Length: 251
Picture 1 (cartoon, one colour):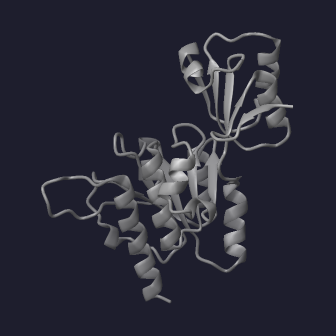
Picture 2 (cartoon, rainbow, N blue to C red):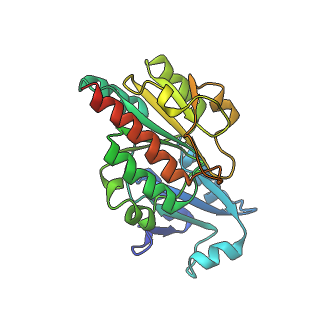
Picture 3 (tube, rainbow, N blue to C red):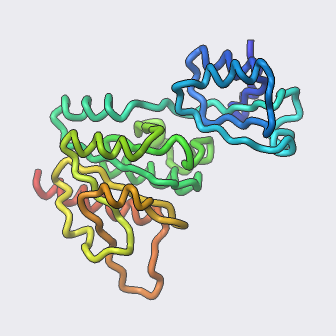
């Protein structure tokens, strides 16, 4: 038996979280008290072996803000959605005879931005989204609401190593297009009618250099005003609907 706060999809207690993991529950994030060390904690680490659940080590005060119950230094949130394997989804997309359009988000941590991006991606016909297991927005009720329910339709993959995932997509025949402002080519220079994965980065630090180096093409959105950057959800929408426009034009 484990303890769940249904309002927040919250599980607390070391054994409770272990049981949830062993039962195959999808967990969004686990908060662990700093300095925790006991036999149950060791069992928890064993249960987490091979999984991509994000861990965050926090002081006791953080845990007390989440619940006043006996949490034993371990609190977890159940996911609001199911996560998928990018390899499985890519194979399914090809088997359906579709030209894949995939969206990769690098360190986009704002919940409402993430929800808005998912909404635009679903409308633009993106086949699935890929996020890192660490450094991504928590997919909670706010994200679902902002997405207008799109996150119940859009399939999301949570990958432990985005670098390897990008390499896999390229080996599978997808071109990888990175969108950021520090380049010369425009989004209109890209051919989105090909199998494509688009990378969008956080507003604070953009796309990681290791992913930029692995991209086939780097493009930017043309700007005419004095402000040199866009909200990432707006930028994602512009890029994805350029892809949709090109694909409809070639249909």
